[in-house]
Length: 196
Image (tube, rainbow, N blue to C red; front, side, top):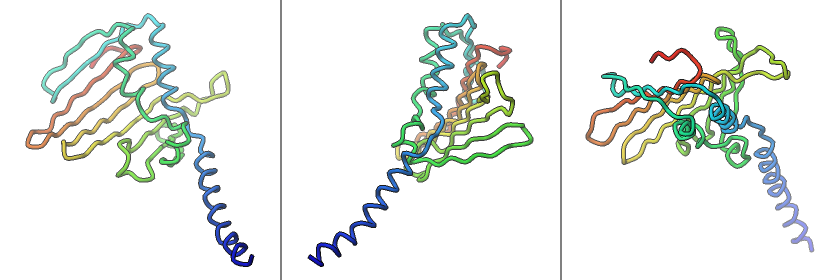
């Protein structure tokens, strides 16, 4: 009987510790960035904006084309396929830091992976306006994402910027083994001045 009781007492701290770890992962209430992008895409889908895409390869020249509204979702696909940090399993792999940047007058919410070697997403930053809107909330004005894939097939880095209600930008750097680095900049504009 004493062996059973002492065995139970030894197992109790392990059980309590594992329950606390699960609770910590579930307690993270991160912003659902994917739902912010979904709302933006739904807004553009129902708008009358002229959607323009500028594509520049290695700073040589810029191609310009117009995107039909029904193709906007495909153009924004890389943003929509980001991991959803509101999912508890994904949130458990990231940490959140908040600070106020007085220079740009924005609250910066940064999400970074706990183990950067295991994650392609190296950082997600939300810039939140300090101005309070009519519904007593604050507006996310910019979302910045840094994604890196580095393996034997080569190096891929994507620096992504979403300007709420205006445009998005993706700068892709690729380096294949034995080949020179290539940089492609794609900018999609729907509600701002249309200059590359």
